Image 1: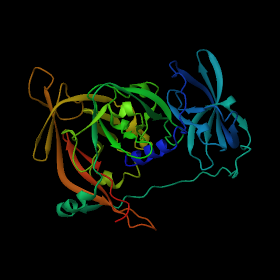
Image 2: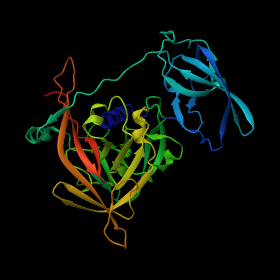
Image 3: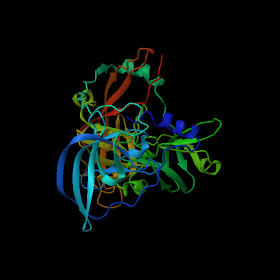
Image 4: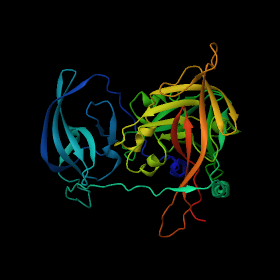
Length: 395
């Protein structure tokens, strides 16, 4: 679920600054109250000023859902006319959808003009579609077969900062293909990041900021945004020199896992395309255990939302296939063992590799694609699955 950030970051670097990065407005702090809702016959509208970001919001006007201006020359269909009151002022909003019926939230009415976009070369009629995701074809893989496949898995590489570093990290609205919003994040000295060095014409370092902890990503979370899966990229020699290569941290599993875990066993794995896991856990590259609660009917963006819990790992020991993570406080909802009454290592959380591996075939008309691999883990008494490293596109 996080396999593409390296490729996307390289693409961003090659664009040399021509990305869709946008300036964000101040977060909505006061309460919005919807006082009237009118369902209307869907009619086409287009953005009044395509040069200016136009955000759609959720019903409470606290979460940005999409930046409609990020998709040029597209027409939108107004399916609802709504009245909201904010700070004593009454304002009209439109609930919008695309021609296929996908709803993108509520938009300030004056930001849209009636009629198809003049440069829309399709001008499709409003025709909602019902798409039903299929069950993933998951197959059990023997230990011997997986051992043979392991050398082909992508090897994650890690770096540690030798001094404080400021990076421009991407964040997105809920519909993460609807424009990005750049925020400055600060990496303290000693921060471990998953990153890949590219010795190309830009000589850049691609950094997995989406695998970092809540405290570092707070500039975006405070704006009710979701961290982008694209990561960050820098070609600044001064910044690149502030990173030194290091070993994979002991708290992270082997086989290319990014430390992302999704609640459920084989059944959840088979249904991963139908519904999100109700709970997901990220063991961050800089050593935190973070928990998220997800809406099963939501978008995968929820896996990159602000965590509901974030606890720093103080120490890690490995015995056989078990990693013992020592925490200063217990992790609510997970079995943690009290091992001492003093200091920052009072609780122990167990991460156990169940040695159960599964493969999902990848299909292509042009290429003989290698399968995607997943492993089952037990974390604090619960079963999760984790994606392993990506396999080569053809073999």
